[in-house]
Length: 128
Image (cartoon, rainbow, N blue to C red):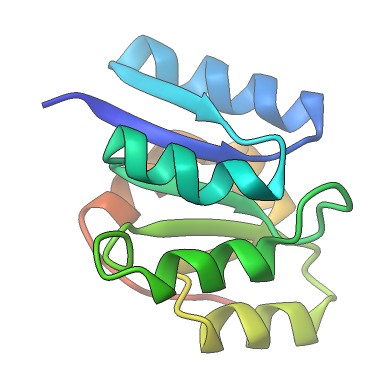
């Protein structure tokens, strides 16, 4: 089974880190650059997981979560989100919208592959 990860991250530094962490382990990345691509790429690719930058200014991560959770075929896609650790409201809202796991930008950066594999295994433990 192909391991497709949707990546809703516009920061090229983080996207490169994700690519370097996942491609050597057999993952295929589908980059999401616009709000419209969230649902279309999710439906087209049968994703294994989705990565969201909750502080991204280009893409509304909350809306992306709402789009996934509103679609019966997509609501079970595990989501890994990262956000600034001091942004408590973002963490709280992400959990309310059903994110599988949310971590700090630092943790995401240092443990990308392990975190993706954790959410794929459905171990929902959002941390603050």
